[in-house]
Image (tube, rainbow, N blue to C red; front, top):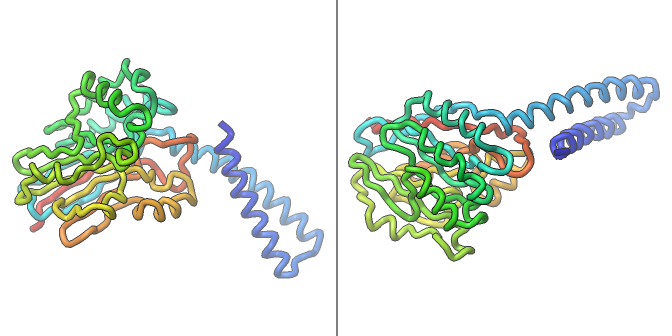
Length: 303
């Protein structure tokens, strides 16, 4: 519970030390001058620290803001409005009340479909049994599509899948493609499955049922999947996992580890990747310069 204040005070103190260093290098050693400056700065330090603590915690706990992104898809025969959610992390810090607010906000967007791209569950699946069925309250034309994230593996992947299959009507895509008539939507097993030996990514299995003459979307939780596999058969790849870095300056480490942080990227001639910063958070209740989001993807056929 003390992580947020500790983090904020550490960086504000670091800033003060930097100012002192600059003053020393400039030869500003007058005691009266330094005393007045120190008083002003330390008062500012307290005010800014309190403000940063409040904003950082609020950014983590609040219902995410809606972000709209337009994407052109060459083979798309009709426009499609997709709500994209990732990294909800239900169970430890975010619970039923958060899910209720998320569903309400998503339904106000009147989407054609909802996709949940991993890290939905972050606790023992039994702890969610009383309210996980609320996922059925998402309203859309084509339904809700779900792909695995790494945290589902950490809490018993078979138990997670069993819970979701029994209590929700989501279309669970594990190395599977669904042909909706005018578009393909596929979900790839998470990279965590390679170490766990369960539900590892199997792109070849997906491609067996993939009609490449149609527009195709791939849900894959970790964006670095795009660096490890040939995803050129897909028009749009949707990922999460990074949380946009969640806490400054960790986005730079995320970039090194995943290759992507947040936003829309071109992977090739036709393939685009969108990496969401996520709806929830992991670890401390803190988001610094990495706000959460509900993403509205407005897909349009290329003219």
